[in-house]
Length: 123
Image (tube, rainbow, N blue to C red; front, side):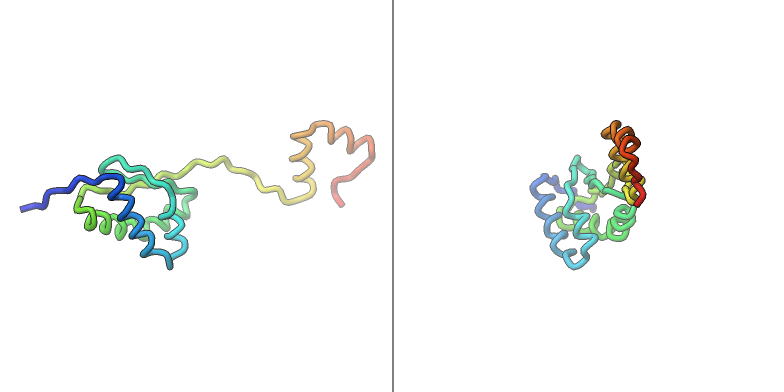
């Protein structure tokens, strides 16, 4: 005889999710991931991740988390999915030349001003 899956409300999921999150407080990286917003469309719980490193971290405890949720909520259909949030690759500006070029993109007259005053952006 198989157990019947119990219906899971968003409120129940939130409560059990928070319990699990508190139990992982000593694992800083995992705790940070568990603090993120998630979407729940029965039976899939989708959590947004910022980068591939977080995805590998989640994989380390995904099975444990899924089993915990299934046991506490009495629903074996629950699954945990993740999506990688697309971020535009923002270039980090390091050198004086990169700083000048970045500002010159915003303010095109900087090139003319630099030439008129005979300035050099490299110190």
